[in-house]
Length: 193
Image (cartoon, rainbow, N blue to C red; front, side, top):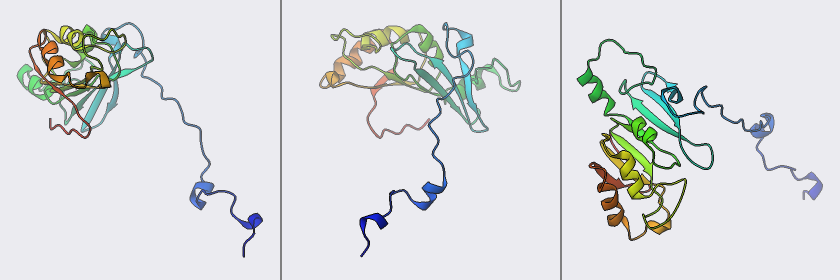
């Protein structure tokens, strides 16, 4: 019989014990990501053969970023460089494959510009219009920010319990200012772009 003194002191595996634990590192944002909104605040975060992404600061009580992902050579990489072989129509068709995720944010013109031309925008819309809130948009605020912008489809995300039973009302409120396809996101939703 093994006594308490002979029992292992840790439940970690041998592999875990051989690998020293490192404290998590805080991610560093690309230079220029913070600061006043404008073209310099749109920074490339990732670029590979199949996927490119850019980030943009949002308006929230804590530091948050929105992301724009372009796959298979589609979309603008945010550098301002022209690849040379793409005319305007082909570039517009390629950009329609972009996916934009707002993160936690208020609705504002700069973020609407960042999402303009994307196939899909998943945007925070946490509360119905009758809730007075900051740091998250109401449907009417989101509709006003998106007015005049071209996004293939908008999915409302980050829904608080206050939105239960008010989905049709919220869609109508966004639609009063924004003339685009607006739907509610749900857990496990997959979207082909």
